[in-house]
Image 1: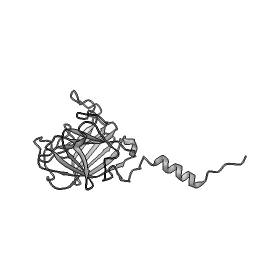
Image 2: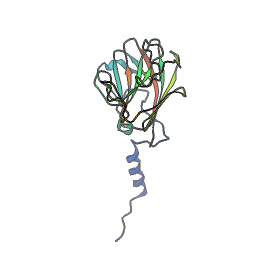
Image 3: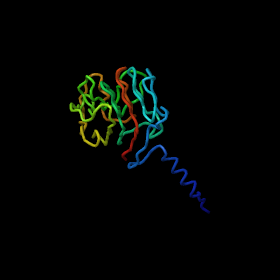
Length: 212
């Protein structure tokens, strides 16, 4: 029987389509196009988030903006994440990972990485909120800095401008207080937090790199 050959161009096309939403490790992928909130989803108080000059501007009532795009079908397990952040005096925000979309209230699932240089909350930028907290202030308001998160297995590394501020390994059976039972390593998407009407925070260059 004569074997039927598949054209090489078709093979390349099929391979490209199969891997289009699953970038390999070593490749940084942008989650924000700099122009709109396409691929992001927010429920209550959606007006808290807007886009201007290549930035996501966070200013308004409590709300959370969840990545809802095609990269990894917005379900990340092992990854590196980074974003440029600028806080304004008295601002509070956060970056959630391994979370899932909620219409309102504080996300119940996943961990929060703190964004706060001068708010009344003593947990400062880089804290793995309520789990491994940072008291020191490493960056200033009104200046851009880079916040970096790496999750590999049960290990979480958080860096501020390349300085490691959290190096945390989740224990086999972590103890969590009531209401925080889902604050554990799992998988999920990312979310940006709008904390309160007095908080103003800008985000740009939001990137992810998966770890196989």
